[in-house]
Length: 150
Image (cartoon, rainbow, N blue to C red):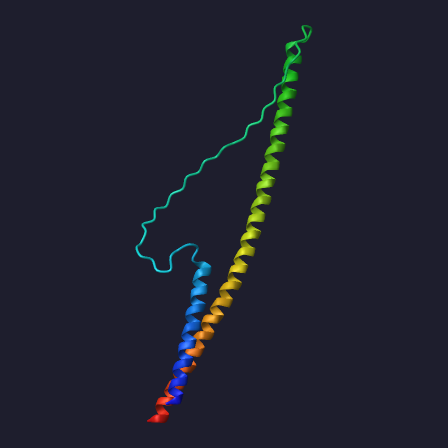
């Protein structure tokens, strides 16, 4: 009789620990979802994206030289356009590099967050597994008590 009572107590404690460990595990991954969903939400997939681009500009004034030929004027315009092209290429390369760097930082942050989340989940799951082990030991003790009294 005492083995049955002890086994029942150990089983209740084990099941309580397992329930607590599973609740902690669920809270770690729930991300705002309710514990008991009362109704299903219909989900629709859709995405809206808006892109705003920043434009920069510079005004140039040309001094007209009456002695300058059309070829000289075209040469000067080509030099200005080449400078614009160089500037735009440099800005585009800088932005691409900053986007690459930002992606790398975001990826590293995700890895850190995921590893800490996994560590928490392991600890919570370990608690649940220990509780289930205690529940199994309690059931065995109850079985031993039932066999001893028979």
